[in-house]
Each structure stands twice: as structure tokens, then as C-alpha cells.
Image 1 (cartoon, one colour):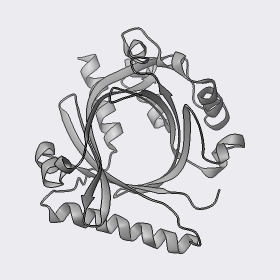
Image 2: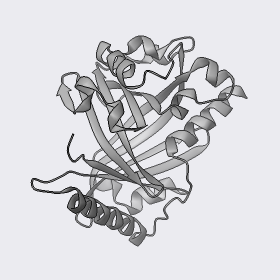
Image 3: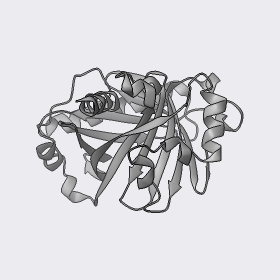
Length: 250
């Protein structure tokens, strides 16, 4: 599989609007979307996140252009990614990525298969009583069968919506940073992220050190603008899904 791209993420708590302004979000083109995550229906009824806890994420995004549905394994291992899913590929309307996810709280491998849909194709899948799994692409079914065969998909329910605002390629120092704010169930998050790609001739140790320098540079660029980084251990996905389950059961 060779060296993999690294997505580096830092999370911000508190005044999200103020942080967006301090980090220069006005310098980029703003895009708004609504996001849902699909979870096991029976698990949600019991207040459990069976898919997320099993390392599977199902995400639907609506608005801002084409709709899309993603199935992701995070964390996963290289040994899980078998057959055609052992290497990235892009065949319209599918994009398959394998990359490392780095944050202050850990480093994991992630594999995601995105299927683009025409605008307006997905809202029916997030209505009450619908099962988002019915919209899985045939290749997404193959991906889950081959690489997450221990996870059951007996019936899913959509949790959301999450209001998302994203601005790509915001200049911070010599970095191009993507900013994405989420709001749902009384929670507000801001994530700043960059991608570091291997260069020709990189060896594993050299690339790792370069990615670590970029992580430090991103953290310092955020802090220098008076924005505080989150010290909470849970991912924003886990926190927002936990809040959405609690809201649904009230």
C-alpha cells in the first residue's frame, strides 16, 4: 500500500463564530450543508452507537452541490482492506480513500468510500421510518461485506440534522487549512484540518517527521490567533451522535 496521506485535525471549543473569524474564514468561499449519520436502529433505541463502536461510520451530506453518502472504517487495519479495497481508487461517482487520521488524541487508519448523488437524491433516506442503507451503492455493499463483515446492518436510522459550515483553503501562515463548523443538539464544534501527502522519494520516517512538523505548525497557527484547542478525548462524531441519541429519546 506504500505511504499514505495524513489528514491532521485540531478541534476548537467555545465561541465557534469568533474562532472562524479569528482564523480568517472570510478569506474563503463558504459552503453550508446538512449532515446526518446513520446508526443501527435497535442500538439507537437502547442508547447505543453499535456502528460507531464497531468502527463503522455512515454519513449523508445534503446541500452545497451534489449530495453524497460515505461509508467509512475508522479505525481500521491494513489487513482488513482486502481485494480491490487494498488501494485507493476513483471511478465516477465513487471515490475510495485510505489515509491516516491524526489528532491531538491519537492516530488511526481510516478507509472511506464516497458515492456522489445528484442534488435532492438523499433527503428521502433521512425521513422518519426510512433506512439509509437502502441507498448504499453496490460497491459500498461490497466494501462493507469484505472489510467489515463482523458488523451487522439489519436496519439503520438517520441521526441529525447537523448544520455544517465549511470553508476550504484558508491561508494560515504557509498552510492551506479547511475549517468546518458543526452545530446540533446544543453542541457547537469547529475543526481545522490539513492534508499532508507523501512526496516522491519519501521514506516512512522522513514522511512521518514532516507530518508531525505540520501538526505542530497547525496547532501553533491556531493558538497564535487566540483560539483555544479542545482537550476533550472523544471525537466530535462520537460526541454529536451521543447528543443526538439523547435528544431523540427525550
